[in-house]
Length: 439
Image (cartoon, rainbow, N blue to C red; front, side, top):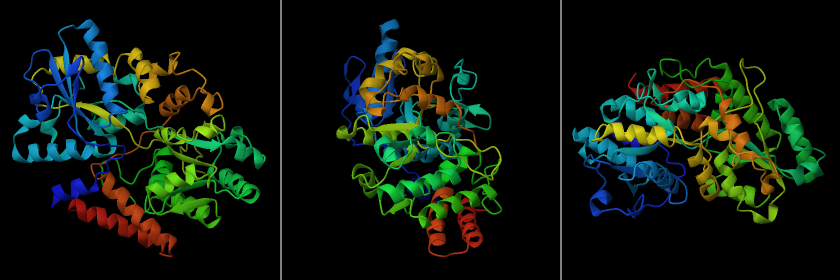
């Protein structure tokens, strides 16, 4: 039952298609690599990852960069869906046979902690590996840190942005500066004017998704869990403030609740809204609206009013690289990650124009590539801004049961929107998570 709950509760945002059509750093992989297990030592590493437009080109470029200084090095990349990575890991760990695991795998940040908590034997502790983890944003790093130990090398940046149509703002009498460094009360007042003068909602989101609530929570370093990873929803004033803000936005008619992800995307591309607040990966969708080039700009998100330590920065999404304990040459795997994703600005510069992958590696923000004005985004250097946002994102308490808590709150928010008592709904959410945890 626990394994089934794990698979069901772990979202796989951003995972794409899944053949095992894979390539090495300099050519096609062997059939053995396509089967998935780790390489047999030597100078070869096998990697599992997904998305042929994003993660796969990034890891291949890392292989090319490392091979330039290590001519005998070979990288075998096996395209594997995020959910398939997780399912295969569960199967291997439960069977007690880890031999089917690769040398390195990419995993979703918000699902990883459940895996390392239940199957710590499957992963290599990188704390004393020589990798300089101080070069990554603390908020991002926290997802791959368990009991003070570092297990992963952060990859893509999930920093939250507010992305808005500057022409719609202008019609309402505002600029992007009016939405910068503000609180949620100020935001709602601006949104009301935008709705009145343009007929556009300010934001939209899935009615059954608590993403906005979770982003608000992290922006103040708050969480659904305490420092021991136990549910801490009851009596959580920050959570109640987030829910209150959400309610107010919907009731004021400035937040458009939609039924599903496709409707959310359509609300943006169909110009029903002025903008969106989400992980910066949403820029790929927005930039598909080529006729709106030059009419968008980004800024930070609003901050909470009553909750202590409130900031204008948060995170939603992202992933990190992990070395499995099945790796036959752990020193090579460590050096590869240390020299590329944890040490090469060149890598992040090279993958930026081809994949749009914005790293969480802080030195990359100082590079020329990251500081180039982007015509689509009103000539803002958005890549450097996003890394800066990431560096300012607070850490918060994480838990192996993050998705269980998230989903329970998502259900109860909709009950609240239909008239349920807030405190009772929150208590029901906590009880559900406690039951799942067996407490």
